[in-house]
Amino acid sequence: MLTDKRILMIIGGGIAAYKSLELIRRLQDEGASVRAILTEGGSKFITPLSVSSLTGDKCYMDLFSLTDEAEMGHIRLSREADLVLVVPATADLMASMAHGHARDLATTALLATDKPVMFCPSMNVEMWQHPATQRNVAILAGDGITQIGPEAGDLACGEVGSGRLSEVPAIVDAVTAFFLNQAAEPTTDKPLSGRHALVTAGPTWEAIDPVRYIANHSSGRQGYAIAGALAQLGARTTLVSGPTNMSPPAGVKIINIQSAREMQAACQESLPADIAVCVAAVADWYVANETTSKVKKNGGPPPTLELVENPDILAGLCKSGDMRPELVVGFAAETDHVVEYATAKRRRKGCDWIVANDVSPATGIMGGANNTVHLISDGAVEDWPEGTKEAIGLQLAQRIAQHFAPEAKGEAKS
Ligand SMILES: Cc1cc2nc3c(=O)[nH]c(=O)nc-3n(C[C@H](O)[C@H](O)[C@H](O)COP(=O)(O)O)c2cc1C
Image (cartoon, rainbow, N blue to C red; front, side, top):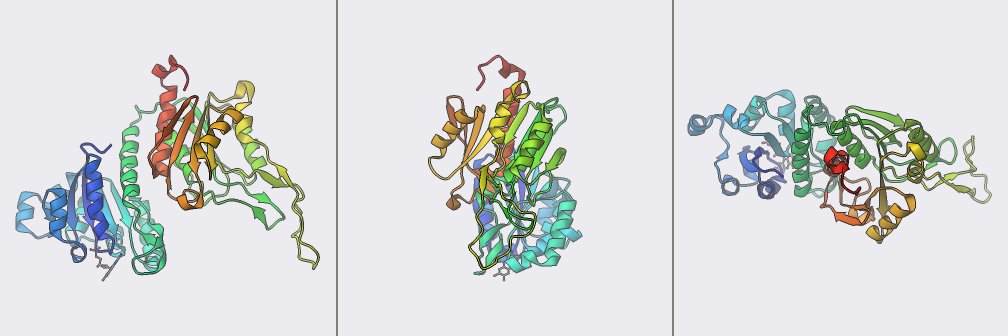
């Protein structure tokens, strides 16, 4: 997937620097060539010899090295790459990047590069959450620099929280997705232009009273990634979203709703569409005895919630008669017998494809950054390797584009 891609890796002085060694290997496995700059801080954690042994090149460290400057030059080093990848991105490196410091070879190369930059933060939770770090994060986002992670979990310092370097496979996936996106970007490569795609994402909130509701752990990330990827491939994309913390993807029309019934109405009003991808984790039931005033404890028995089944948005789209989108894709979030239940769901709902994922808590998929899915169509089950939700979104959008490709039209519908 990364054949012929040249990556300049900048290794900062964080405890996770050792993971950059594994990352070099994995990027090379995908076909990339990797050059590395090790900061002075980075060299306190891993040796230049390890870096050089893995890259098969010099380990670049010194801005004022006569030989390095004569042979390569910091400008050439930063330009002769397709991507600059900062990993681990320490708080200090991020501050330098945000404020344009050029105090050593790494920061000078980052300032001199004309290539895209991605960074993978890794630090203690307090450092990460510090307003100064968060200001730098915002500056870097504004500069169009792509952030990968960090993840929440156990940190090397013994604390727990956000700040953990993303896992190596997730970084490889993000880099791969970046190059795939880049390849899809030229305006000539918009295979879905002229198509309208409808995507649902996020949870629904089913009100109990004016202050309480029933919800679920869906983050919306997978649906937003799919909507963004479809838009990138040229589809006019409408995203009907339950409440999430996500920013709408570029070029996507967003309709914000709360309840399943609102989501259904918004979907029906958005037709006609060529493509419907129902990713939202829609509540099965709504509260029929929702109250207009806050329910109070009054010393008596707890209130009884009267649950009534919500409309089936996916099945409804499949049964829209003339308005049925040509390709309807459902998602099945299961905790047991994932493929078996999802296959049955495809038949029951009448959709063309089902994307099945295992949302057992141990998988971390619900609300997490990664996903492992199976694409189930008529008679075929494809097991896709684990990837970031963005990489899975792009892969699905590309499969959808293949379905609509003129040369695929003569073939039996998958
Ligand atoms: C044992 C130890 C571990 C550290 N781990 C981290 C870390 O994980 N992330 C971070 O941002 N800074 C960490 N620091 C602080 C950085 O090493 C320090 O800010 C350094 O100047 C960063 O160098 P750089 O700008 O070359 O990355 C650590 C320091 C020590 C002594």
